[in-house]
Length: 185
Image (cartoon, rainbow, N blue to C red; front, top):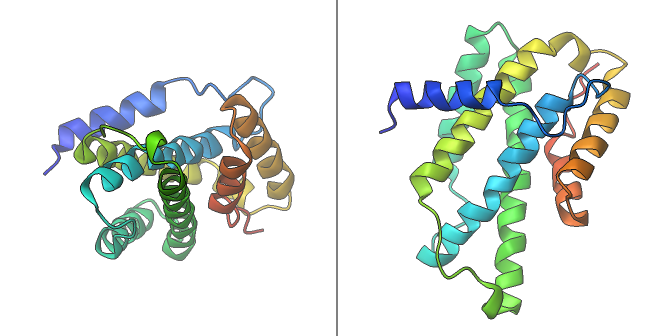
């Protein structure tokens, strides 16, 4: 079980760390999209773990646990839990797609498969911390996310983050999928 102090420290570190995708003139959604991108990148580590252990990519029990916890936190933060659930369902689906993508690459080119993998607990702690950052950003940007300006701001943020993180075409598509329901205005 993760220490609440450890989770708080991780969240604080992620929130206080400057986003490499954030410039002064960047979209107000850049930090939210960048957190989603970083969370998506953890899929490579999780895929390596599952490849090494023979684990399944989908983990419905963990997904339901995560969605329930995030919806509960949304209620506590006066956010719409259905909206939050939808956002994180998209994020999880994009993450699973990234894991399947890596598995396909490694199946076609076994020499490219990872010889070692990071610790699953550490990877999940990173995911949990990014979830908290994303939820905080959703709360901070709630009005924009539910306004007509959202689509243009989201497009700008997604493009900027994809370029800054040097995402290939697959990861650009995965990020677009992860963020597709952000605008609800």
